[in-house]
Image (cartoon, rainbow over all chains, first blue to last red):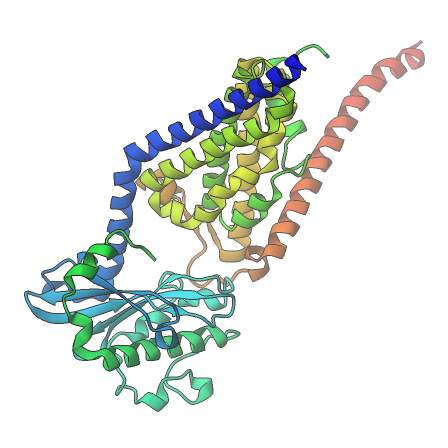
Length: 218
Length: 232
């Protein structure tokens, strides 16, 4: 009896020691590279924002000036990050991270910048699971399709023309892949509608909330 | 227990004759999922190698300390810790590559190849042999991952080592190869079926080479016996 209890206890202690050892190894590493990782994420995000914002007109850091909004109908997710770009106090653009819920193979994450006058500063695909060689032409690296959005607005083309050509709209679809472009065109249009609806309120400085948003990521 | 294997046979076993991916067909999930390009395959292979060397070494060091009843949870703890380490280090130093491989790095935890080597080899052998075995098995896997990745990338996309600079630094742009923008490629190679077909071809090729080597060895052995009576 005694030996059985002892061996159970011993096993428990050894296993516990390994757990503690493993966790501390990970904790120490995380402590030493954590800052670097956060910096990488920040830089990667900043590079993305820079390509769709008029950098010369902006003198704040949009990544430090963001708020979280909730509009599932138009932005596709329960919480969407909104980054605000300003020149001193005057608003220049907002960048939103809408989710396209109806991609061909699951949700597609976008980055959409809307200038203060309601035109698109640019659209980029952050992540997707579309078919390689067909739907993945939405990536900037694969084709220029996504660049066509730049400069468009709700009046150019008019709202009813915000569709792929097959549906009587203005935007190209891909051979063999209509669902992906269609869902993105719809999502970008909805994002524009949302920004138009919200108007100036998106630029409201919200002191208390920006603090809670720190460190949030998509 | 049989006599310990020689270093040479441990090494060649891991790389070729007992290649965990081509012979044992372990770790198919990362093999099939991440090998859409040679760079991805190489990155995944190197990450796996790092984990398997560390886990083999640790498991071998503690093999007399760990009671048989708790060895599996201990292996899992060791492997999970090292995978998390590799993941953190990749995020810190190869962030762009991490964004491509991200999800699959954490899946190294469930790669049965690693726990398989811990159980079958590292827990029964001295630490130097265990380290060598981890290295050989890891390199064998890297070889398969990179070859299959290269094959699929070349057939499907017309490039080889595209974006290798994400992993290896700027000099690697020199080894990137492209057939040009207009190359259409066979889409199937990039899609999941392409991974199965490519793996099948690689296994067939390995078996062919092994058969050929065997026949040659046999042919060399037989004439030595046969020429004797005919000469007499």
